[in-house]
Image 1 (cartoon, rainbow, N blue to C red):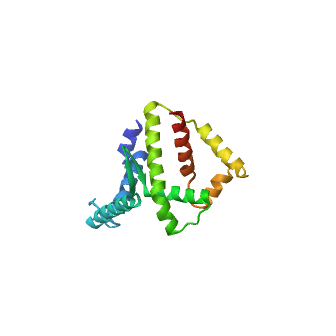
Image 2 (spheres, rainbow, N blue to C red; image 1 turned 30 degrees about the vertical axis):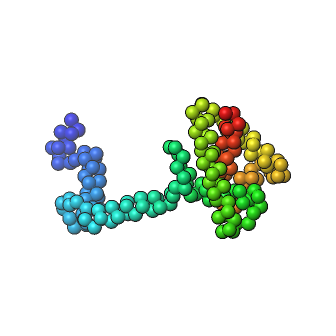
Image 3 (cartoon, helix red, strand yellow; image 1 turned 90 degrees about the horizontal axis):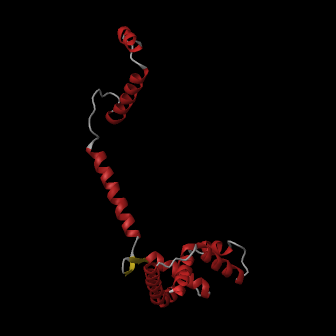
Length: 178
């Protein structure tokens, strides 16, 4: 009844008006304020979008550099740099190019061994509970007279992600069960 009354009076139902309004604004945004017809986006917009997509992809690919391939896993340069920094902090060794050059092969070999250990643990179904890793971190904090959470703050302050240490602890605990 209402629809017949609206049609007879020349009025459109509210939902049709909303749809028409949305379409009008979309056409205005895509085609400009004076256009009555839809036209596809200009080629320069498409080219700019493709350029940005390719640039973003290549920038991401440049950020991840592979230091070693271990079966189906990789060790990235970022992993290596973080572990080097952790080793330097724990040994109280200055961060110098000479020290990095000297330590890098040893640290890379350790990371490769840990990847192999974790792969073997996974194959054997060995899992390390998060609570054990947290207990090991708490033990390190206690031995170094740090408050709870102090180790993470110390590492972050020196540019070492906490995951660098927890990955090392996890691999060590897992390998101890093999």
